Amino acid sequence: MIDFLVGKTGVIAAIAVVLALLVALNALLRPVLENARKRRTERGALVLTSPVLSELVSYSRSCELRFEVSNAGANPVVVTAVRLRVLRQGPSPSSRATKVAAPVTVHQHRVELKEGKDDYDIRARTYGPGLPPLSFSSGEVEAFLVKLVSKCPREYEFVVELDWYDAKKPTEPHTLSSGALVVDFPFTDEELPRR
Image 1 (cartoon, rainbow, N blue to C red):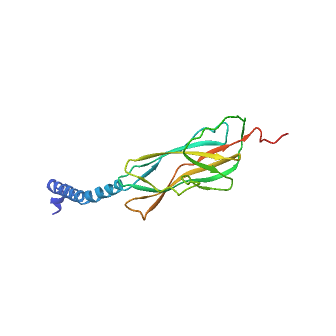
Image 2 (image 1 turned 30 degrees about the horizontal axis):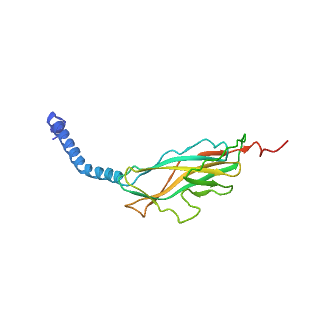
Image 3 (image 1 turned 30 degrees about the vertical axis):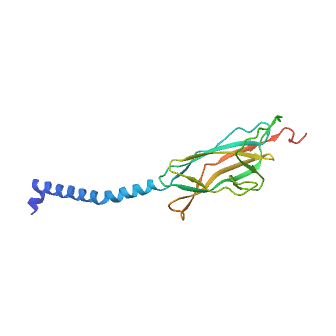
């Protein structure tokens, strides 16, 4: 028996057995792995682009925040909240010259940042009923333009957060957050202390 195992025929037989086991293992594991891969791609997958801040408007304390939200998954998803969460705030470290100009009215989302407040519903309305949740089909994209306003000279560090769920799994909520951004609403030269 030992001569058979160490001989040329035994080695070839052992290699054939190992190959047969690998083929059988592959046949058993392939459907399991393919189903797992298919389940991952079939669920909803919300993507938030990197938010971008515009330059500060020269005649007021306002700037615009732009970002896009898209569903990269196969299932529809429902966004139940779009928030701006302030991480840090404090007095503005800078100043700027005062410029006089008439502001231009633009109809888009608006958030008025206030000292001491950290949580803002970007889609909230001042008057009228609240907006319904947003629904994104597979591959659908929606852009947001948020005017950020501060009546006092302050600096804010914040993130954009989206609460959402896969439409096929509404009992499994998710939260998606952007990276941190900083916006500074500086003192005007008229607000600086006189010497």
